[in-house]
Length: 170
Image (tube, rainbow, N blue to C red):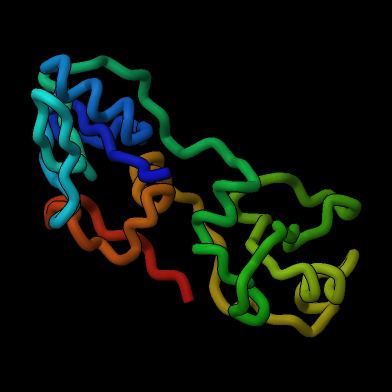
């Protein structure tokens, strides 16, 4: 499923929507395509439009201010680009840097993506106790960074140059 970034009329990132929803917004003249997939088009009996990667709403939508993105397991995996923080291989689980049994919580700074083997090997210890240093430090993504990461925008292909750069992860 391709996700499409939705920008407010002021060009600030609002959310991501499915490709179908993005096309409906464009066809209803509620949004315009700002960036499209280079070689993909959607065709119908009376429609021929580029497959949108980024759309912009024509009317400004007021949204409450959010200082940080809400924490989730999926969000941690996406933030770390599905790479294990201990070995760099494909991550399938989330590990708590300070284990929950020792007071560590479900926060952006206390969780990292991990492969099952390293998560099991680290067990109920801190990385220092397990002698497993982190390859990169966890960070708190802003809401717009979280949306760009969810799009798989690490390649930045097809996205406008004016969108913010993402923090580097190993």
